[in-house]
Image 1 (cartoon, rainbow, N blue to C red):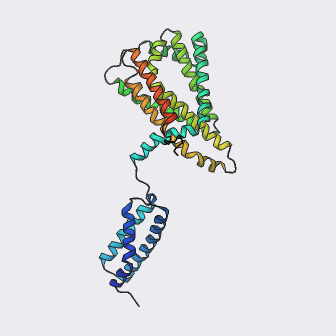
Image 2: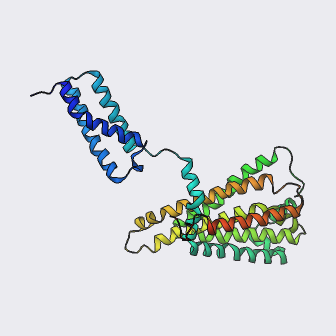
Image 3: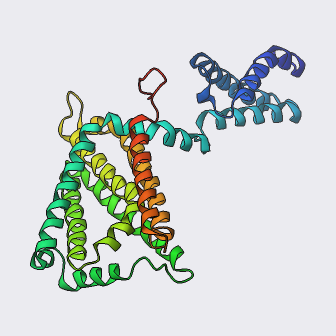
Length: 324
């Protein structure tokens, strides 16, 4: 016997109200307990069936509209992408990024060695022999660097700081991206770019110092170096970690091994990108300013200390453990 509209509404109204209440709790269902998510999925299937019955039976537009709206809300809550949340970015900065760095400490240590040792070699070689410098960089590039750093510390013309900050974002992110992305070549690409960039930076520092402008150079890079150089090392470390996940897969496939590591890789590379944005702002507006060198060095020391403390301690639970 065919149900009347009133009988249909009376029999099914409790289920509709239950689903409506579940949807009212959260915009997206993944925040609910597992049992509630399962119940919402079951009710969603029932609502879809009720909607088809109501249309087939020719019930009034009011009933059909209510069911249509409820089904659409449930579908959106179950299948739409989670909304962008500023809180997620804060969670990454406050705990996710530094915790991921600590979990990959061995790769960070290796990346630091691969970056710093070539830098020391480049500095010593270029400061003792200009011929060494031009073997790594062209003669014109070495001369340009010597000239550029001989004129620092006087500030820039109006509008120049913002333009250079934009350039530094582009340049630094490009370096970090290469250090990370080439890690897909079983880590070899990341190793190459860490060694290469460390060597080039060391050669520039050595050549400029040999030309008598080392004080200008180190005063210039002191402030933003805490963020920029650290971010390059962390990007390379993430690339090496990616390569290692492809080599040492355990019982998993290479793809599954890489997926298992993807969370930490994402946190590290996004965190490094944020550090590079900070570095670009400092490099664009603070580093070339005419502020006294002593003040720049004091600020630089404070920034290095803050970055190290952040990476070592941020995101730890009060009992000394690590948050995930």
